[in-house]
Amino acid sequence: MDKLSLAGIALALVAVIGGSILKGAGVEALLSPAAFTIVILGTLAAIFLHTPMSVFMHGMKMAKMVLMPPRHDTQALIERIVGWSGVARKQGLLALEGEVEAESDPFIKKGLQMLVDGAEPDAIRSILEVEVQTREHLDLQGAKVFEGMGIYAPTLGIIGAVMGLMAVLKNLADPSKLGHGIAAAFVATIYGIGSANLFFLPMAAKLKAVVADQTRVREMLIEGLISISQGENPRNIESKLRGYFH
Image 1: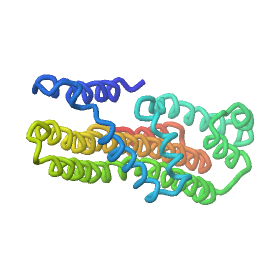
Image 2 (image 1 turned 180 degrees about the horizontal axis):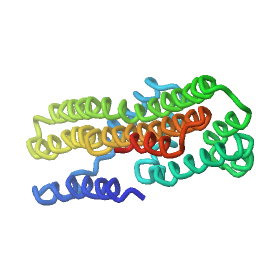
Image 3 (image 1 turned 180 degrees about the vertical axis):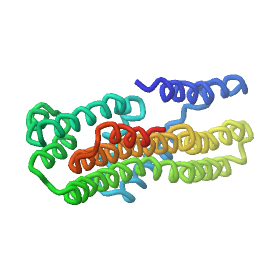
């Protein structure tokens, strides 16, 4: 669990709800089915038009990584790579076949299998880099789902406010309804700007950071496998791989 993200969500809610209470508007002022319909449903409608279904669904699956990002024990991975290097230098690449069978990560397993099969370093790099780039592109598209929602939500909030003011103008003859109507009109603006800047855009930024971290780990792994294939000294491999995480 990412405690910082959890704290951010909690503080965002406190900022909006607490601010409304401290300003004297109260919690009730933030409750508006009409504003929710215009802003949230409108934002979903816009992102549905903006994004292919497969990308949207992938983005929704990625959302959990904001609170539960994948953890990478880079120190342990470097030690494993160095261990594989030592085995390969002493017993040959075929000795890593047991590591292939025991590996659960598909990407690592694929790279080790190529080592055992005696693939050339250039072939290992080109095949694995294509997989890394493809995965990175897909994950970034998923993160951009929330970025798109952060772009559309404020505009929908303005539309909601304008629609609310239009309703107010129809009741100019009844001054008792003006104050309540104007307040309700601006709730949509709060929904739009608040959801974009407190949730959607920060989520997109966090997911992009997670994707970048995953890509860096995979690039380090590729470099390690190439170094093993070329028969480099385990100490040199360790020094090289640690440079990825200074």
